[in-house]
Image (tube, rainbow, N blue to C red; front, side, top):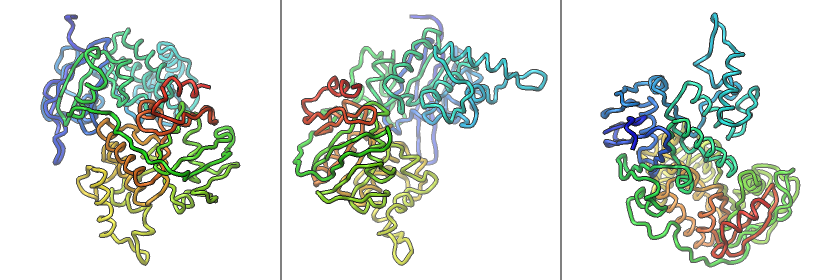
Length: 496
């Protein structure tokens, strides 16, 4: 056991907001060259604790020491000066600036009052070389891929000699290949003595990259163990605070006739001759690697994008879907992959977000019936267990799982017969996932047909009745019985 003090030690951290005690004496430590996984359900206190570490929220009580020295972190600059870098899920980059400009923004290298651009460029190139990657230094960051933007954020952290790097859901929008490259970089950072705090809901990644795990529940520590002492089941039970009988609820599907049928769907190279159907009472999983064309396909079905060719029918009747309102009118609903950009108006209240897409039946003579709007939302809030102080709360202040449930409430209020769920559990903790799985089972039991897009193979195998696999815009195979399918079979088709 090393005699060196931890890179960081947080003891008895307390943080309260009006009406909420977010952290209740939380402890956390991180050593040099270690990856610490910070786990817990949404609302467990992970983000608040990292904002305390990042200087965004001063702690009400508690002690923080860095390299064995007591430290007060009142502002993000204090945190940065102490060698802490927090890479949030929504990157903190200026889209119009290139990698060099973003890396040194606010910490420019200057000579004689002028920015030393050549020196900054050489320093940036050295940083990316240290990360073992080639980066176009001139392309605006807004035009880089998500993985490339993430590498710019890591380079920013190294530019000011951060020894503690926090990564919040770093793999959420990455392909499997990009995740593996990220893990290579993290392992290299470990060899350089940098400590990494890794936050993710993807438990397979935790076993692949973490050395130790700290678990929070309801703002308090519930466990800290070396990864070798944990298995998936134990980890989930610690997070949710109950014994886990099954990660996925049992399905007793009564599958009937085809409801939605698409044939020969095309749009450029993104979607090429895609055909499939989904039946009454069925969950059809549409899977494949990121970029396989799954989202592009369902956007064509929903009328969000214009198709080049192909036919769509519901219950045997052809549909002429030119825009989303045509799909909604026909009884087809889409839960979008990006709830923040495409599903919600973050600055508006929960009630307003619920009412906006449903004004056709929540208004009379051009006026919104607010009483009815509140009553209808209350029904779905109770059904979906949406945690919200009041219906006037801005939806942007809710946790990720509650935002997702608001989008689900909007969708369910339309009484659609076919529901398309594009990554329905993205960024959602295991407890909330189980609730959504139960809801999906209830919907299919009522005769609804569900198309579920997912890259999480345990979820695909645990929830689907049938699986369609895509690769580069084409259907590469169908597994007619998800109960007997394997992850290996899916991956073989996904890389075909």
